[in-house]
Image (cartoon, rainbow, N blue to C red):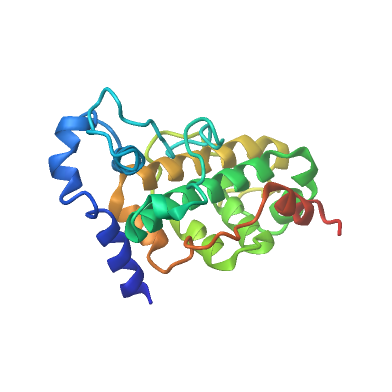
Length: 233
């Protein structure tokens, strides 16, 4: 299964744009543009059957937590999948789902109603860090096991930018639970960090999606995660 999915993803990124990263990048995409942004722009613009140039390219960007809307940044692929070839649609869907899944977790973690669940996990294990706390929360409360497992593994990758670190205990010293409210923004920042990493490093992205965990249309919504974090039916 992993091999099949890997072949589909790699194939999607070369079709219908043969050697897209070599031939189109210099003509159409900014030299420093992320691979995911370049591919999305080419995929969507190609559907209009225009000559692709920097002047008429359709702007899409799934590399941040700010772009999750139908009119800005990272909208879901159109319901009419025939606009894409099957391979390019599969790649676009995976790019969107990775961003959407991480966005949903960030929104759920940031919701005040989620603090009881966060605090309960924070009190269980010491010492720990915001990153390991985030992984524990996803393992405990996640609804989509395959995608959540992939996200937990992604959180094992080193940070690509400096982030403040707090630890709730030191070896041989006093140990105390992390403050849930204090830790929330650090966990949200960490989610933004790994999202950007996946969207700028294709090998990291492929590692996240290669088992097919993001090829579904049934990923959890923010409200569903908040409900389980809040601890109410």
